[in-house]
Image (cartoon, rainbow, N blue to C red):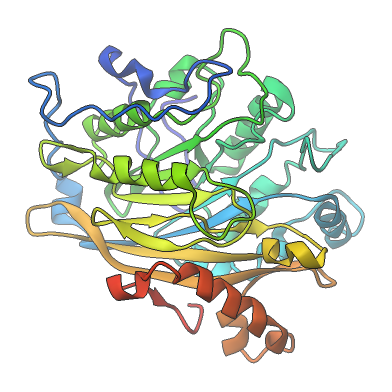
Amino acid sequence: MPAFRSHSRRTVIGLLACTAALAGCGSGPAGQAAQTAPPPSASTGATQAAPAPASPAAVGGTSRFTLVATGDVLAYPSIIRQAQDDAGGRGHDFTKIFAGVSPVVSGADVALCHMETPYGQPDGPFTGYPLFKAPPQIAPALAAAGYDGCSTASNHTLDDGFSGLERTLAALDAAGIKHNGSARSAEEAAAPNILDVKGVKVAHLAWTYGTNGIPLPDGKPWAVDVVDVGRIVAEARAARKAGAEVVVLSMHWGSEWQRKPDADQLAWAQQLTASADAGRKDIDLILGTHNHVPQPYAKVNGTWVVYGMGDQMANFPGQDKLAGNYSSIARFTFARGAAGGWAVEQAEFMPQYSDPGPPFRIVNINAETSAGAGRAPRYQGPAESIRAAVLSEGAAADGLKESTDGR
């Protein structure tokens, strides 16, 4: 991976390699289950790096920035056919599918997606469940919608082997989208993924509970980041050492179709949000994916955790799985304190819906309703269901608000 990568909207900070002492930033060994080793202690002696001071850009520049995040991008065959129709039968065009959420995504200072599946060749063949292979034309559509980075660690990352992983990251690179969670080399896996957001260095980490039993490629244990709490903390601290002022963690975790976080999610959230080095939290925000359905937002040890945003792009036609088309858009405003550190000042969400149509479109429900669009009344039920899930653990009492106009 090159040391510098351009982005269509924002300049990206150069990536620095992890130190040898923190070489465990990559994945766990192939075939292992996700680990729950305790994070390194903040008081283990002189080997711990001191927290990096606030950068001159941050101190002399912006005092706040907004981050928007969305859930799993899953290209089911029906969605691929819609993209083909939108392209007039000449290739695949996903821009119209994402157009409904582009205003809120592009309006953020930094926007993060989750690219769940690998990409195939531009002309296919493309496949759906259980081994996905999606059109690479999704990547430029994500960039056009305003995304700056994507997590790529999921249970489907290796659906098309290591070549599919390489193809996916190449397509994201070509679109100017940063990525983390999978890698083409040990060097790429060890390099902190840091974005420049209005002069603030924001690190984005991504890990998955597993790869559906597909072993990591021989000799490439770094190909996919498989959850190990100690390694996650090491990666966060390496990012801090490389200058990161805010560390955001994407976690592909939990039990599918469950609206409540499972035992692993609860345990990992507790461990990760409690982890600190010399009084400075290692993780500033956790964004969850994988569950297919919306899950609660919650403050854990003073840190916001989105247990599950739900699938952003999916099409589940069965009555028993309609909630798989429901998700939330998360938006967090970070503010710089007097001492130069950063914390979430405002937490917000917006209900989002994969409307099967026709035509299939991703809908920012509140924006659609505010505009008085013709299909708005049919979104009332999905919005209520999403709202109930997001607020089910009492996040409103901790300050979570709904953006009622979807802006």
